[in-house]
Length: 312
Image (cartoon, rainbow, N blue to C red):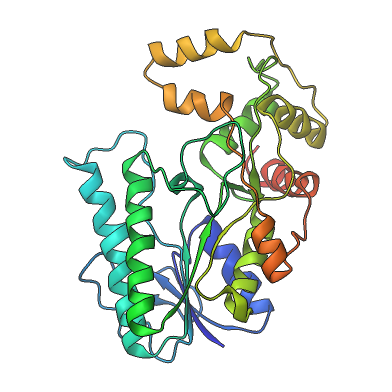
């Protein structure tokens, strides 16, 4: 199968290219600027006017990973408009050109944030979406537009909503947490008893591969996870064990941590460490027979090993 992957130079995209090449796909990486990747196609900035004609030549399926993601200090005058331009209109522009070019299947990487920012019970595919920030709204609007294109053209659309994805080369908060554990810094999460679903990079790429191939996946939306939920405190302990380091957890009351987050304007970041966000991934397991090839424990070992070799 000839396959176009957008966002191919990113954390997930690079691993996905390797997975699919090993599986025998003819992979065409789409990148915004030249990266020297084999067979790459440079498409420039992604938006409502991007020309995908050359990149789509001969493609039978597309995995759309590229997106405008969260930034700590968004300088856009209208953040929602900026997210919509890339994540909504850019996605729908690509999908329309896919349909016109005869692409059979379009796998769209959305986000669990379409479901919401977390709650005590696990999210499922049947829940009413409740996106709360500009990023999540733009992804939800893209999902709706894709279903309309699917209905009008016959393009087979598969939508995946992952939670936090971790693995070798992960960045952002997960990397900062590993660095803190490796340095032995005390962390104030000893009393945190939340539950979080995570998704190991190798499990994610395996699920994407299956969704490209399985006939039942067409027209479906799936939530994904490793299948084991973990508290922030337990995550630190497991990281520390994988590093042969002590887990230095201080028993700070959760209410104090939330107050501290609010005082420094980091309530959302703090809530990701304190609140619960779990998903029920039963549907993809039942309908496609998917089983994550890696456990949470194995995924953390791989992520930590890469960190210690290349970063720590």
